[in-house]
Length: 323
Image (cartoon, rainbow, N blue to C red):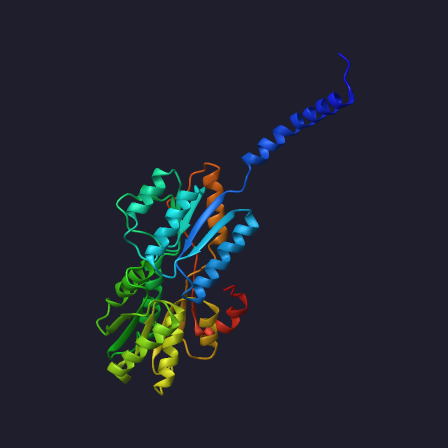
């Protein structure tokens, strides 16, 4: 049969399409993995840096990131996770506001066949198969580091050492564990005593408010402030100064995170030491997403390496800080 021009064009188009199909199928197979991430909020310098790390790492690695801010409310995180389940994302990641109350929503994710990655904070669930891995810091060890530094600093002090504690969000993993680790170390010497302990909710404003109450109740009876994060410590420093006292001199100040604001406070002679807790988890998270998508096994616990920085090294270390 003789082909006319129209039939010839159709034949050529069909041949071209056929040659493209394998590439099209391959492109579909390699579509970007979709990660739904439910963040705690934006309560501190640390959390802001953590969010930026996740967003920039997703962009750099080609992960399609769906991001939500829970504003420090568990119900908002649960709602976001259920939204990600409904959207059929490839992986769900989140940093839980508190440790408990996750079993139901995580069972829903498991039933939907969506793997879950925990970052920064862990959960307390009956079935640990409800999440693939937990990546982040050892909060108990952070508390121990803070305690060891204090014990060493006060080793020649024979008198009582009265400590006030600014705890993180009630029920959160870092608040529970940083308290546990710190107390584990200081209990070795009865001269160390926590005389006041209250949540500052990881925020600068609340840290200042609670420290004001501590100073009103205890005054010059306070020898040490142990804050579960730098933002609360910085708020407390303001309260100490407003009370006519010298932070880091009249009251020893220990905090956790290692944000730039803490280094600035140390360089100003207002903070004695900060224990590092790195928020730069974005690259690790995107690597985990890629491994999950490729069917590779992951360890149940992925730890970050961190140090401790007293004020004496703050000036030299400050240029190295990325958050």
